[in-house]
Length: 228
Image (cartoon, rainbow, N blue to C red; front, side):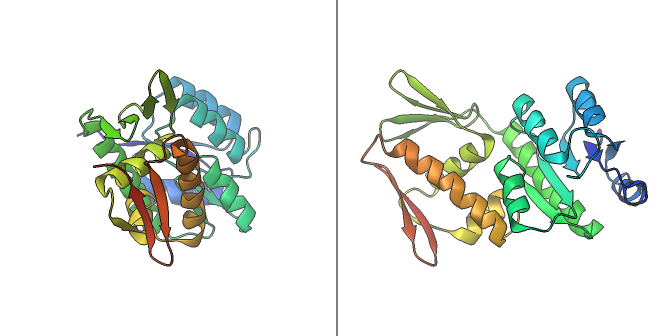
Protein backbone atom coordinates (compact mmCIF):
# COMPACT_ATOMS: atom_id res chain seq x y z
CA UNK A 1 0.00 0.00 0.00
CA UNK A 2 1.39 3.43 -0.95
CA UNK A 3 2.20 5.78 1.88
CA UNK A 4 0.10 8.90 2.44
CA UNK A 5 1.69 12.08 1.14
CA UNK A 6 1.92 15.10 3.45
CA UNK A 7 2.71 18.70 2.52
CA UNK A 8 4.70 20.10 5.45
CA UNK A 9 5.52 23.84 5.52
CA UNK A 10 7.85 25.14 8.26
CA UNK A 11 10.64 27.74 8.06
CA UNK A 12 12.42 26.76 11.29
CA UNK A 13 15.05 24.36 9.90
CA UNK A 14 15.75 22.59 13.19
CA UNK A 15 12.08 22.00 13.99
CA UNK A 16 11.38 21.02 10.37
CA UNK A 17 14.17 18.41 10.47
CA UNK A 18 12.97 16.87 13.73
CA UNK A 19 9.30 16.81 12.70
CA UNK A 20 10.03 15.51 9.20
CA UNK A 21 12.30 12.81 10.58
CA UNK A 22 9.49 11.51 12.80
CA UNK A 23 6.72 11.84 10.23
CA UNK A 24 8.77 10.08 7.54
CA UNK A 25 8.61 6.90 9.61
CA UNK A 26 4.90 6.79 8.73
CA UNK A 27 4.30 8.98 5.67
CA UNK A 28 5.87 10.48 2.57
CA UNK A 29 6.72 14.05 3.62
CA UNK A 30 7.36 16.93 1.20
CA UNK A 31 8.81 19.88 3.11
CA UNK A 32 8.94 23.57 2.13
CA UNK A 33 10.08 26.58 4.14
CA UNK A 34 8.34 29.16 1.92
CA UNK A 35 4.59 29.58 1.51
CA UNK A 36 4.72 30.54 -2.15
CA UNK A 37 6.85 27.54 -3.07
CA UNK A 38 4.56 25.25 -1.09
CA UNK A 39 1.49 26.50 -2.94
CA UNK A 40 3.15 26.00 -6.33
CA UNK A 41 3.93 22.42 -5.31
CA UNK A 42 0.35 21.89 -4.11
CA UNK A 43 -1.00 22.95 -7.50
CA UNK A 44 1.22 20.44 -9.31
CA UNK A 45 1.04 17.43 -6.98
CA UNK A 46 -1.52 15.34 -5.11
CA UNK A 47 -1.30 15.45 -1.32
CA UNK A 48 -3.39 13.68 1.33
CA UNK A 49 -2.94 16.21 4.15
CA UNK A 50 -1.29 19.58 4.86
CA UNK A 51 0.66 20.58 7.98
CA UNK A 52 1.28 24.34 7.97
CA UNK A 53 3.20 26.82 10.08
CA UNK A 54 1.64 30.31 10.12
CA UNK A 55 4.56 32.74 10.23
CA UNK A 56 6.22 31.92 6.89
CA UNK A 57 8.26 33.88 4.32
CA UNK A 58 6.33 34.64 1.16
CA UNK A 59 2.71 33.61 1.62
CA UNK A 60 1.92 33.14 5.32
CA UNK A 61 0.13 30.09 6.65
CA UNK A 62 -3.31 31.71 6.80
CA UNK A 63 -3.11 32.87 3.17
CA UNK A 64 -1.69 29.50 2.13
CA UNK A 65 -4.56 27.62 3.78
CA UNK A 66 -7.11 29.92 2.12
CA UNK A 67 -5.48 29.36 -1.29
CA UNK A 68 -5.41 25.59 -0.76
CA UNK A 69 -9.08 25.62 0.25
CA UNK A 70 -9.99 27.36 -3.02
CA UNK A 71 -8.50 24.42 -4.91
CA UNK A 72 -9.48 21.59 -2.58
CA UNK A 73 -12.29 21.77 -0.02
CA UNK A 74 -11.62 18.24 1.26
CA UNK A 75 -7.93 17.94 2.13
CA UNK A 76 -7.29 18.02 5.89
CA UNK A 77 -5.23 20.99 7.13
CA UNK A 78 -3.43 21.15 10.49
CA UNK A 79 -1.82 24.38 11.71
CA UNK A 80 1.34 24.25 13.85
CA UNK A 81 2.13 27.66 15.28
CA UNK A 82 3.76 29.64 18.07
CA UNK A 83 0.83 32.08 17.83
CA UNK A 84 -1.13 31.33 21.01
CA UNK A 85 -3.84 34.00 20.93
CA UNK A 86 -7.41 32.75 20.87
CA UNK A 87 -8.12 35.01 17.90
CA UNK A 88 -5.41 33.31 15.84
CA UNK A 89 -6.76 29.82 16.59
CA UNK A 90 -10.29 30.87 15.71
CA UNK A 91 -9.09 32.54 12.50
CA UNK A 92 -7.32 29.37 11.46
CA UNK A 93 -10.35 27.20 12.12
CA UNK A 94 -12.66 29.60 10.29
CA UNK A 95 -10.37 29.38 7.26
CA UNK A 96 -11.23 25.70 7.12
CA UNK A 97 -8.38 24.15 9.10
CA UNK A 98 -9.20 20.88 10.82
CA UNK A 99 -6.96 21.48 13.85
CA UNK A 100 -4.50 23.93 15.39
CA UNK A 101 -1.56 22.80 17.54
CA UNK A 102 0.47 25.31 19.52
CA UNK A 103 4.26 25.01 19.62
CA UNK A 104 5.94 23.29 21.31
CA UNK A 105 3.79 20.31 20.38
CA UNK A 106 4.04 16.58 20.96
CA UNK A 107 5.05 14.54 17.90
CA UNK A 108 2.89 11.70 19.20
CA UNK A 109 -0.14 13.99 19.39
CA UNK A 110 0.54 15.33 15.89
CA UNK A 111 0.76 11.82 14.44
CA UNK A 112 -2.44 10.82 16.25
CA UNK A 113 -4.30 13.79 14.80
CA UNK A 114 -2.92 13.11 11.32
CA UNK A 115 -4.18 9.52 11.56
CA UNK A 116 -7.65 10.67 12.65
CA UNK A 117 -8.00 13.04 9.69
CA UNK A 118 -6.55 10.61 7.14
CA UNK A 119 -8.94 7.87 8.29
CA UNK A 120 -11.87 10.27 8.08
CA UNK A 121 -10.88 11.25 4.53
CA UNK A 122 -10.51 7.62 3.53
CA UNK A 123 -13.96 6.78 4.87
CA UNK A 124 -15.38 9.72 2.96
CA UNK A 125 -13.87 8.51 -0.33
CA UNK A 126 -15.16 4.99 0.28
CA UNK A 127 -18.69 6.11 1.15
CA UNK A 128 -21.46 5.46 -1.31
CA UNK A 129 -23.24 8.38 -2.86
CA UNK A 130 -26.46 8.21 -0.83
CA UNK A 131 -28.86 11.16 -0.80
CA UNK A 132 -31.09 12.11 2.13
CA UNK A 133 -34.43 13.88 2.16
CA UNK A 134 -34.81 16.36 4.99
CA UNK A 135 -37.99 18.40 4.92
CA UNK A 136 -38.13 20.18 1.56
CA UNK A 137 -34.40 19.66 0.98
CA UNK A 138 -32.45 16.90 -0.76
CA UNK A 139 -28.99 16.41 0.72
CA UNK A 140 -26.15 14.88 -1.31
CA UNK A 141 -23.26 14.43 1.17
CA UNK A 142 -20.84 13.10 -1.44
CA UNK A 143 -21.08 16.30 -3.48
CA UNK A 144 -21.71 18.68 -0.53
CA UNK A 145 -24.98 19.75 -2.15
CA UNK A 146 -28.25 20.75 -0.49
CA UNK A 147 -31.08 21.22 -2.98
CA UNK A 148 -34.52 22.75 -2.56
CA UNK A 149 -36.58 22.92 -5.74
CA UNK A 150 -34.36 24.41 -8.43
CA UNK A 151 -31.93 26.00 -5.96
CA UNK A 152 -28.75 24.17 -4.94
CA UNK A 153 -26.64 25.33 -2.00
CA UNK A 154 -23.02 24.14 -1.96
CA UNK A 155 -21.76 23.27 1.51
CA UNK A 156 -18.20 23.04 2.74
CA UNK A 157 -16.80 19.62 3.61
CA UNK A 158 -17.18 20.32 7.33
CA UNK A 159 -20.76 21.59 6.94
CA UNK A 160 -21.61 18.49 4.93
CA UNK A 161 -20.05 16.14 7.48
CA UNK A 162 -21.86 17.93 10.31
CA UNK A 163 -25.23 17.77 8.57
CA UNK A 164 -24.71 14.09 7.77
CA UNK A 165 -24.01 13.38 11.44
CA UNK A 166 -27.17 15.27 12.45
CA UNK A 167 -29.25 13.32 9.92
CA UNK A 168 -27.87 10.02 11.21
CA UNK A 169 -29.15 11.07 14.67
CA UNK A 170 -32.28 12.90 13.51
CA UNK A 171 -34.80 13.72 16.27
CA UNK A 172 -32.42 12.50 18.98
CA UNK A 173 -30.02 14.46 21.17
CA UNK A 174 -26.46 14.56 19.85
CA UNK A 175 -23.93 15.41 22.55
CA UNK A 176 -21.38 18.18 21.90
CA UNK A 177 -18.45 15.94 22.73
CA UNK A 178 -19.68 13.29 20.27
CA UNK A 179 -19.79 15.84 17.45
CA UNK A 180 -16.39 17.28 18.32
CA UNK A 181 -14.62 13.94 18.62
CA UNK A 182 -16.28 12.58 15.47
CA UNK A 183 -15.52 15.54 13.19
CA UNK A 184 -12.70 17.50 14.88
CA UNK A 185 -10.92 14.63 16.60
CA UNK A 186 -10.96 16.30 20.02
CA UNK A 187 -13.32 17.85 22.58
CA UNK A 188 -11.68 21.27 22.84
CA UNK A 189 -12.94 24.79 23.62
CA UNK A 190 -11.63 26.29 20.39
CA UNK A 191 -13.02 23.42 18.30
CA UNK A 192 -16.34 23.98 20.08
CA UNK A 193 -16.33 27.60 18.93
CA UNK A 194 -15.65 26.45 15.38
CA UNK A 195 -18.50 23.91 15.62
CA UNK A 196 -20.92 26.62 16.79
CA UNK A 197 -20.07 28.68 13.69
CA UNK A 198 -20.91 25.77 11.38
CA UNK A 199 -24.17 25.02 13.22
CA UNK A 200 -25.18 28.69 12.84
CA UNK A 201 -24.62 28.43 9.09
CA UNK A 202 -26.83 25.34 8.85
CA UNK A 203 -29.55 27.06 10.89
CA UNK A 204 -29.56 30.00 8.46
CA UNK A 205 -30.05 27.64 5.53
CA UNK A 206 -32.93 25.77 7.17
CA UNK A 207 -34.82 28.94 8.04
CA UNK A 208 -36.54 28.47 4.68
CA UNK A 209 -38.26 25.32 5.99
CA UNK A 210 -40.19 25.66 9.27
CA UNK A 211 -40.33 21.87 9.68
CA UNK A 212 -36.56 21.76 10.26
CA UNK A 213 -34.67 23.20 13.20
CA UNK A 214 -31.49 22.53 15.13
CA UNK A 215 -32.35 22.85 18.80
CA UNK A 216 -29.79 23.74 21.44
CA UNK A 217 -29.99 21.41 24.45
CA UNK A 218 -28.29 23.40 27.27
CA UNK A 219 -25.11 21.83 28.67
CA UNK A 220 -25.70 18.68 26.62
CA UNK A 221 -25.71 19.22 22.86
CA UNK A 222 -28.09 19.61 19.95
CA UNK A 223 -31.07 17.98 18.31
CA UNK A 224 -31.98 18.10 14.63
CA UNK A 225 -35.77 18.17 14.55
CA UNK A 226 -37.16 17.19 11.14
CA UNK A 227 -40.00 15.14 9.62
CA UNK A 228 -39.46 11.38 9.61
